[in-house]
Image (cartoon, rainbow, N blue to C red; front, side, top):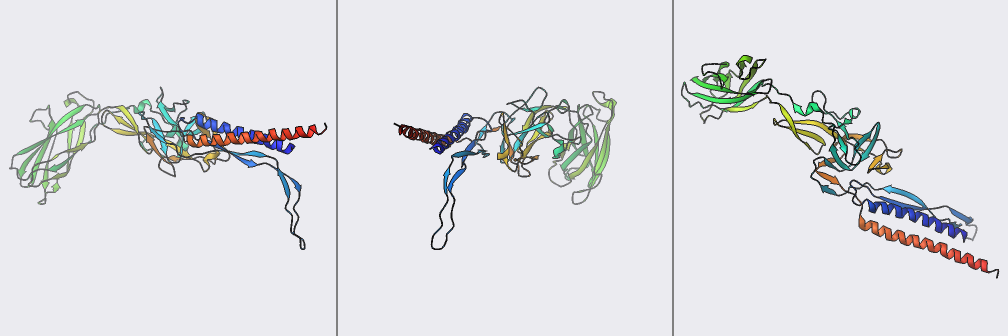
Length: 414
C-alpha cells in the first residue's frame, strides 16, 4: 500500500507540471511568435518481487513479478510548427514563411526568435519592439554589394551616410529610335536631353540632327539657354543602306563650367551614344533613352522583400539595397532554450546555428507587413486540460483509497 501512495503522489506531481505547461500555452494563445509546449510522462522504476524462471523439462517458464513505483516526467517538448500569419500595417513587422529564426544580439550573446515585431530606433537601428535588442544581418560593402559571409554579421542600421545620395554628374546620354530617311536635305530634328552637373543641378541640352545628304546627318548640341549659334559639341553620322550606323557612333559634348547657368567649378562633359539610332522611312521616333546623371536624393521610404533585403527609395527615383536581414536554423529546434521575450538560446542539444540569407540554404522567406501568431490550438489545449484534470483526480483517489486501507489495517487492533 505504501507503494501505491508514492505512485499516486508521483502522478499528482506530474499532472501538476502538465497543467502548468497547458496553462502557459493558453496564456500565450495571442503571443506573437510563441511556440507551444507539451509534457509527456514515462514509467518510473519497477520493484521486482520475483524473478523470471526459464522453461525446464515439461514445465513452462514463469514471468517475473514486478510492481511499478509510479510515473516520472518524460519530457517537455517545444513544438516548432508554423503559426498562422496576421497582416500588419507596419513595414517592419516581419514573419518567416518556413524554417528559420531572426537573430537578435545583446552584447556578445545571440538570441533567436520568430516574433518579428521590429522598428527603427532613434539611432536608425532595427530593433525588436519586445526588448529593444538589435537585429543582425548583412550590410553593403564599399562597392554596394551584400555578402552572406557569417563573420560579417552586423546590426541592421540606417546610418546618416545612406539617408541621402550625393549628386552624380552625367557622363553618358543614350539615344535610340528612328530618324526618318524621308526628310529632305537641310531639314532638322531636335531632341532635348536633361543632364546633371556635379552639384546635381539640371540642365536642358538641345540635340539637333540635320540631314546633309543621302544617309548622312550632322548633329550639334547646346544648352537651351545658349545662343542658337552656340555649339557645345558637333559631329556627323553616316548610315548604311540597311539603316544602321556605319560611322559616327558616338560624340562628345563639353559644357564649360562658366557657361552653366549656376556657375560650377568643373566642366560638364558627357558622351552621346547613337548606337541605338536607325534610319528608316518610318516616322521619326528618336529619343533620349537614358542618361546616368542623378540629382541629390533623400531617403523617402524603406521596403523589405522576401529575401529580407531592405530597399531604400530615394526622392531622385533611385532605389538602393541598404542591408539584408539574416536568418538562422538548427538541426534540432526543440533543443533550444526558452529565455523569455519569445526568444530562444542555443543549447548543447540544439546544434550550432546555420546562418544565411532568407530563401537560401533551407531557410524560409520573409514576409513584410505580417506577423506570425502563436501556434497554440485552443481546442487541443482544452482537451488536454480535461484529460490532465481527470488524471490528477484519479491519482488523488489512489492516495485516498490507500489511506482508507491503511486505516482499516490500523483498526484491526481493535
